[in-house]
Image (cartoon, rainbow over all chains, first blue to last red):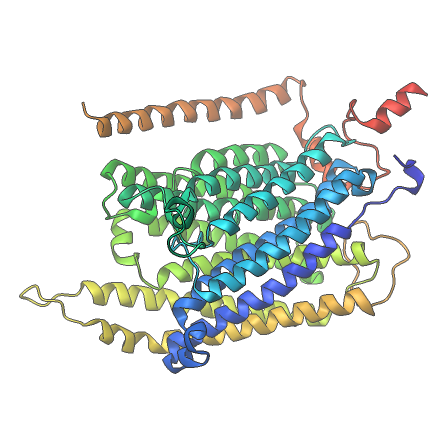
Length: 488
Length: 72
């Protein structure tokens, strides 16, 4: 152990994951924009043979943005903020540093294997769990290493109390570990049959309705423990730190935490409304989804009230703008989700474009905004340079806000139109519209969505450029900024 | 009563039980602070004062550097 005088936080692992966040963010959003354009202009499906079709690229898009971009962002912000709230440096333990770096190496191998295998068409056909069994085994290894680093750091901490962000990071770790294992219980057919078929292939250990239930228990909680819980961990650290204001109510943060943990796990069955699962379970999914508004808004309101008396920062600091808007989109998204989970609303909304509309106001407005804002906050501390351009950040903000609004408004209209047309019957009870009628009506909204994708992707490129310039040529800082991030 | 009905009742009563626990937790949080036993709001400063040289809000007695300090 070194003496305190020479001791500094070590950001080498956080930096590595920052690079993968930017790389996979670009790749995932590029593919997302391409497949959005394919829905508007179907001829774009035939650019690269079987590798360029919507069906092949859609799981690639979701997996890259979830497990490439978001999870990298979670690891980067964890390795940055956990040291600081525990007041212990990674440099104090050679073992933990080794674990962190090994986790990064295995993670990169896993992510590349995921991209290649999905592009080749290897898929378990479970939504958001498409990776085949060898990759699942590697995922478990990467996750366990993260756990070792997390609890290892906690073990050598100087600060006795765990800050609320760490509670959320721990919940992310435990929640994903439990759900991922249950949902990916599968039998590799090659091994089970004594050498028949493809070694990559597997079948689920569950069947029929049970399989669907376990799948959506995972599917919805991927939203909970990857898109919500670690992002709340980020905002609980980065918003107070950037604004210089302590959390409005620490008690409310604790209460919202337990509320969220208690309620979220039961809401997954709202994905299976009007299906073959028992009716009481569907009702339970609906009710718990509506109750979810309380802990979600508890966190979001707590974040907004943190800015109490300091709202001038919203106009002065674009980073605060990103974080406050992220919190606002979290509120919008967590109100919209429960509305969609009400059985009667779901009868119209299910399988329509309103669902990806809902998902994207959450992921573009909440998840990606918060990850980009966190990395912007981390950059001057990690690279000891000021942020390259405030103007560019402002422009990025307005471009991406426009993109998010265009995305979800077009999908709201498209979704409701689609749902109503599918249900419309004439006086004899015959369906009034065929499927292609809906496609023709929805085409303009798909075009607007593709445009939104182009705008958001452009904003992300501006973010990547700003980060690159910050890392390389921006003005050097003599002293680490305490609160507000310096920018030129 | 078949298994599905049992599962339904089990889910209902477990929900009630967990709601009671959650509300008891709220009461506990506010009561313990009112009595002066706890001060939860001070933990908010962990994020603000997070230099490695900062004094921890609550020292961890198990920390290696703390042990060194004590042995001096």
